[in-house]
Structures are given as structure tokens and as C-alpha cells.
Length: 278
Image (cartoon, rainbow, N blue to C red; front, side, top):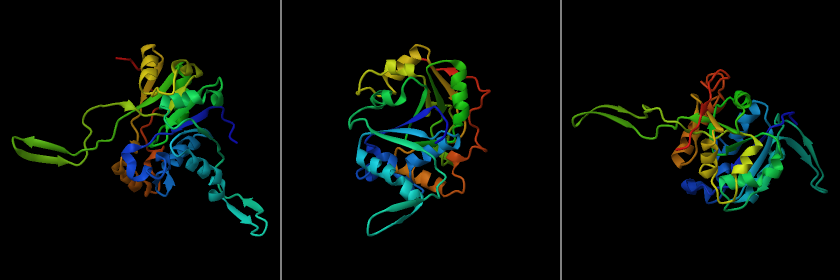
């Protein structure tokens, strides 16, 4: 196993209602992009920077995720099996060296509650946490460096949401220009890929708490939440249209979420921004 202390918590228990065409049969993190579950693409990002100790917080259709990871070593490697006695010998061909813990954190538990339920899995060490349905070429190594440098409880990349609608330029009633996608205004949102100190557990009190509501609001109010602007690629998978976009990008030789050389990702020289609560 990799000698990296920080565990990565993957939130993978939600219903994925806006992707109902897919999630009626499988959990949202198991929806495939480029022939692989979106969750594996997220894990690839961490793996690129040497982080391979994952704890998956499951809920909806948890058994499908458990079976998938139970069999992943067989799917990723070659093996010989004796049909008579069932004896199997594995012939490793995969370079993956992950340790994956799959935990049932409850069907109706919210994101904050899922992290709360993993306290014993984390212990008293810093850890990372992210959603399992959004990919970005975040420089995880530098994110951790920056988190350590400011000494606050939490760090998150601020990302710009993808433009979803076309833009019309008008002169009176006449359309003078049509742009398929436009991002004219500087809008920043929570990009996931958190780094947390164990002190964040003091802000998590029940299964009913979404991480994005009271916990992060209170952490920000106490001056303990820092953000960095990530100017590189980031895209969620909230809708079928998002899935189709990611599918097209996955056809590239190097999908943009693992194209770290050409990203404008955060750097160690960036100045952290203290997130304030309204």
C-alpha cells in the first residue's frame, strides 16, 4: 500500500434523483463514464498524487458498491480458476494499489451525517473528503500543502460552474450573436475535494445535516474555512446532459480531469481566501 497517511472519504450514498434514468438501477457513483464508474475517475485523481486509502460512505443500493469493489481486483487483473474445485490464482496486471473500505452509512443519512459516521475510520488525523460524481484536475498535492500552511480546519477549491445555456446578444429585437456556451461572470462554487482537520467533527451533530448547510456555514462563521480559486477543469455529473458531456470528454486520449500539465490548477503560491458566512 501507498505510504500516505491521509484517508480520502468518498460520499456515495445519495439517491441521484436528477439522474433517475440511470440511478433507478444503480447508485449514482456507479454510473459509467467512458466505460468506468464515475467514482473510479474521481479516485484516479487522488491516485495521481499518491493518495490511495479510500473510505466510501454508501447508502442507496450499498450492496452494488460493495460487490463492485469486492470483485474489482478480479476485473482489473488476470486469473486462473480451477473449475472443479474453484481454486483461484491471481496474475496481477493492474498498477492500482488502493486500499478501499466500503461502509454503509445509512439510506437517508445526509452528507454531513455520513462524514460524522466515519469518525472511527478516520481517527484523530487530518483527512480528505469529496463527492463521487464530479471530476476536476485539482492538484491534490498542492491543495494539501496549502491546507497545512494556513492552520485552519477546512480547505476547499472554489470552482466555476460550467455554463449550461447559450447566450444571445441582442440589438433591439435582432439577435446579433449566438454563443453556445458562455461564462461571462465570475461565479465561484464549492468544488468538493475538501481537506479537513479532525476538529470538523465538532460541527457535525446528526445524520440529518447536509455538510453544505449548517456545518460549513458555522465553520466559515468561525473563520475556519479557506478556499482557493481553481481555474482548471471541473464538471459535475448531475444530469443526463452532464453525463453525455463527460462521456465525450472521456473519449480523449487524456480526459481533462487528469490533464494536470495543461491545467490552471491551484498552485502553492496562491493566496487562500477566507470563506465568510452570510
